[in-house]
Length: 76
Image 1 (cartoon, one colour):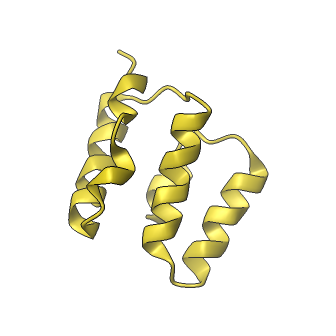
Image 2 (cartoon, one colour):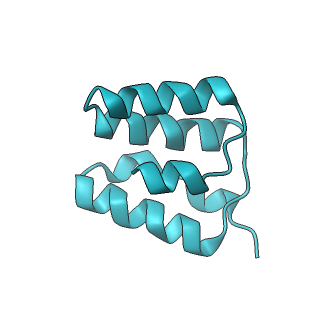
């Protein structure tokens, strides 16, 4: 999760800090969902490779809804 955050297209330091804080407190699922929500809300472009990593982690964590609609942000 920390690697995904480091590679994410997020630019807001406040959002990044919130996600890190959630991770520090052991709230991995909430941190992941928060990160994905902000990526979608800010319509940040995603590479296919990064999107695949998000989908894989969402599947592993059992929270596939977190990545729903992120495919709309794919760029080539």
